[in-house]
Length: 235
Image (cartoon, rainbow, N blue to C red):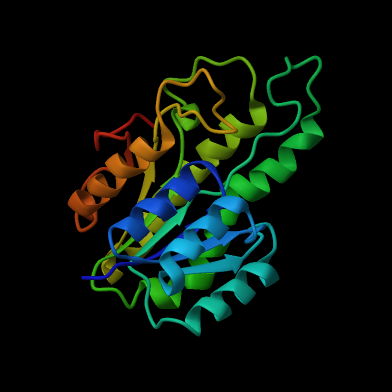
């Protein structure tokens, strides 16, 4: 069956790799990004044609997200998977408390924690039309309070912790409508955000996670916060 997948932050990194993998698997992908003319998306569009629909979106604005939902609804009456992948660090994220600019935190919270809620809300009429809809929020071990060992990254870590709570609330709200909502720690990857020293390749990670999503997509009673092997991760 042809999966219809919506991915935010699809112009680079893990989001672009998810886009590539689902296209390779014969899916139809709505690649949502602020820059739909990014080179990676242009190359995939040339190769896969109508199977890839680039959609301009900025997850910090309700109006922009609703406009994107209206665009997608012109192409399909349902979505099978939504992957909320768009995320950022602030410019001073890695500075110690005495030097970091805490005002930089607010835009990160808006994108990383509230953005996925805006997307879920706007696309809810489409994901609930799937027989077994799956919403994946790309989280991080940095959002785990019980395992926290960092002494900085207040913007990113706190945003991911908030995203985890949002995921649990959405999971509780949507499970009776047969929509599974999970948060996934994908691992440390070699992306613009992860840096060149990370030990995981983002495309290999995307391949691994797409297979994982196939296995757990219908398991609404399973763990909500998981690692890239599907194991429950500590909150």
